[in-house]
Amino acid sequence: MGNTEKVQQIYESFGRGDVPAILEHLADTVEWEYGVISTDVPWLQKRRGRGEVPKFFESLAEFEMQKFEPKTFLENGNVVAVLLDVEFTVKATGIRVVEEDEVHIWYFDAEGKVSRFAHKVDTYQQWAAYKGEGFEKSQTSG
Image 1: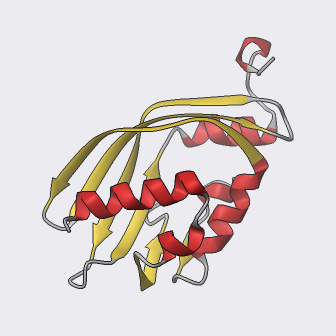
Image 2: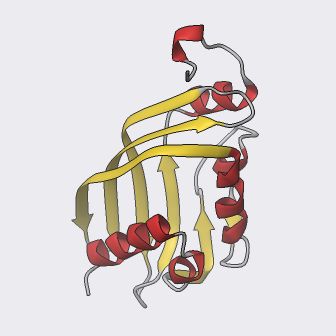
Image 3: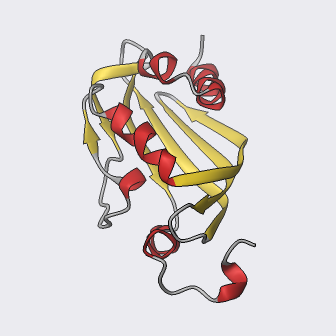
């Protein structure tokens, strides 16, 4: 099975809410949200190791997902990049986040496990929705 197919399986498991099936694809030392992230948004926190990743999925309870649509899968060697359309509403603020062509980057190790993962998103938009700041009323749901 190729890495693109593994990522597609991960997204299918995500759609079912099957976190254990997702964790099976991760290396023990996975870097979740690698790179520079400077935000206190719970779902955009760096996590290290397979045992920390469930905290990411727990943090998703803070919003209601309206759309999660992986559209394009690009694979080169041990890397898969995915373009997705994502829409969700932060429960505490009622503010909707719309991400067109959000990017997910998946790195695989020699054993075929995910060794690094990151969301490449509009961090300001997500932070502002989480904090309830910086948005006009037209951007809120309802």
